Image (cartoon, rainbow, N blue to C red; front, top):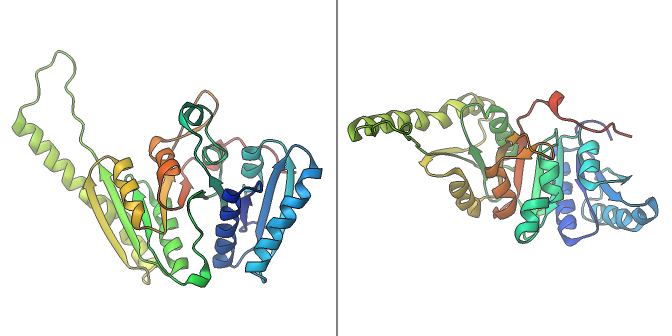
Length: 291
């Protein structure tokens, strides 16, 4: 496959078949090919699963160009490697219960922490929105601050491909704690500071969206700023969305890059698929050489 295709990871599970369905839809929207990746202990195990996946994709979308890749090794590493030149990588996710889920994470979380391409994560309880169903739903953009310009561009492009409206949600909180031993800030000054901050935050969506309105005049846009925790506000907003688009903020961890808390919460609890747009420069992400 050439650059610009869609890559999807499968393992024969129902969750991965839903991811496959969504990946096929996305490849159709982009008029590009689909590569199906299966990481296995040995190549002999790959044949039946990949053959079934190809048959499923071609039955639903006969004109779709489909290729496969069986990779021996870790699933997350394989998907990151195969997706490094992709326009989009797609994976499914299902929660691991309790402490095990928080400690070890899932393939989707490990891919999200390392992938260089935009990543669409389809939760196990989500049924793919097929092209045959026609336009529907909305694209939700979770905007952290005015540096999320690449993510905003991806959200506009996604809305244009789907023929859907775009809703932009920016959530912020005010935290002011005086240093230990210092007197509390007077209430009047604190309120003035909150008011100034609110004006600044209210302007963020407009600043980010304005240049993109000219590029995508066909996309209806609604912006909203709320004073709330981002996780709570975005999770609640996903109830009415076809997909949510957010930046994949990453931070160093003992076992390598880790996804930020808001994106992690969305992968576990979102009511719709999550499109993560990497913020980390590509050159800084370690990726194994592609075969």
